[in-house]
Length: 575
Image 1 (tube, one colour):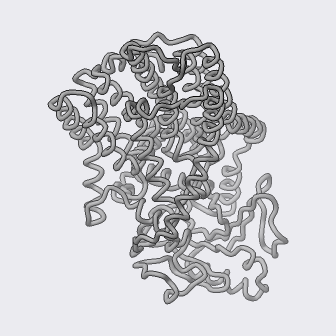
Image 2 (image 1 turned 180 degrees about the vertical axis):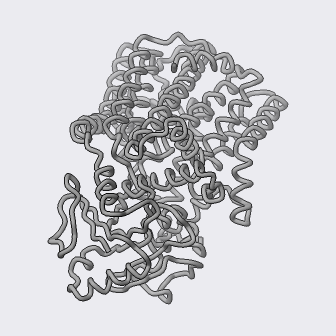
Image 3 (image 1 turned 90 degrees about the vertical axis):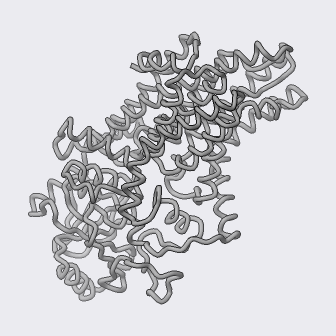
């Protein structure tokens, strides 16, 4: 399948590369490992963002397009989920299996797009060798092909992964495709349909992640800097921009009308206030403080219906599995964005540390081996400048995330794999060394050092997948939902929750609504019986049917009335 798609798009890119047998082995190994991840985690959901994507998909299937339209969550992933659910119509308990099928199908697209990009890099690399006029040692084509493919596998299936239920992996596929078309344009090999496909790729990438809107501007800059005639560049920029607008324009218009202001996303302001300025709380605006203590006035924060411990209520006006996470921009409407150099510096340094730990440290060690062995400058800045189509989009994406977020936070590493693969391809194509047998050995050793370092994380991830494969045969969310259903909990019922990680797959699966939240679980368990009874009464007044609790291992000594679902770490109290 990957080969067929690849052959279909090769004419538009003008690349004629003979692929090695090793590439075929790596391709099908990657697909097999992706399938293994999808199957091992078929009943497990990665993070709370997933409930929002699934809720949006459900709203589309119900025809509730007003509720489905979100300026916070990019739409393409939810569209794919909705389409898959409509086609397969799975039983309730197999819903998350379809989700993993979407992830796996997306990964096949990513493999196809990466191979398009790799063909372009290798073709450009070969042409550069013929034009240079003097012979310098660069990495050999087999080393370039194999090392790049290995890095792609390491990044896509560890830092990113098929089991992570977010659109980040899918976005990287469109990123690779857009970069492949850009390289073809720089090489002067892009045919008439190439700019069209580039605009479509960039538009689709934006529909995956809002960060690709500003990155698209960088791609247009790269086209403008290409070594082509001015008229040719202008035409390419206009065609690319036009087809980007065809894909992205209707969505931008719809969310702008809904929010009564021109916007391409509401994600960035809230996340900047949350992770950089630390002025917006992660869960609830009034968590551990009164309205007078807030650094800014929020228009409609979630309501406190019980104090000590605080119980937050958020049933209206948004109906979702977890309404405060379905549209954070609504609950934190009124957040102010400003610049604070101290907070900004702290967030950026933390983000750079994450990048260093995940990727660049291992590349650095490989470079050290290269520099010591060659006793000369291994990477020519002039050669790097010729690789702008690879470096500029990569640098833009990494910089936007590093500036706009504190990436030293839970789940943040999933943003980076696609951008890092572009960076690696640029660096590998920029090596310039004396052409000696010694240098060939040094290049080989330095490449191995870097790959071993990055491969360590992949090996760890593979081990976790194999362990999960042996323990994930039980669908715990289904067990929870079945037990609650036996006790009279039905779709649409309201639930209160004591779970900081919001592992509420059973609620999404069964159409239940978590409308109340207790953040301070330890304070709740310490309550005297009379005070706890008062809290239960407060929940009943808001027509909440049950209070639920999920623990990573075992719960504290539970008061009377609490029940555990057998085979899970889930407890509940019927109200």
